[in-house]
Length: 106
Image (cartoon, rainbow, N blue to C red; front, top):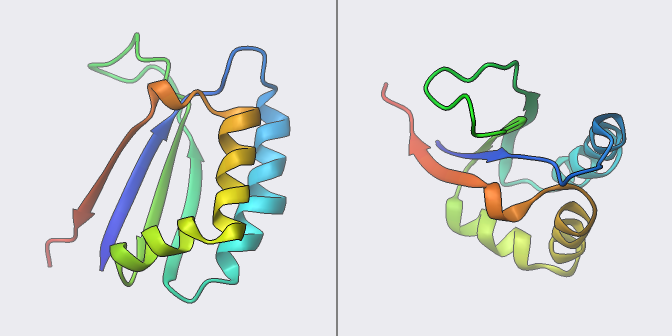
């Protein structure tokens, strides 16, 4: 199954505890309602990041889905749009995001 990764950084002044509470209460809650997702976890990065020490990245998300195309459709729904507006409006510095999709080697 495909996996999408998102590496992200909080906006200046954002309290990490507030963001992590939002992830647990809002982000995870929505994903649990969507059948395309097989696994979704947000991880706090422990610095330093070897080879990218100055990146400032703080979190990595691992999003395992049945279909990347359905994932994009889920993000385009009213609930998905609202969630992303909250995420980028309040918490993450979108300009510092790194994201990519991968396929497991079996």
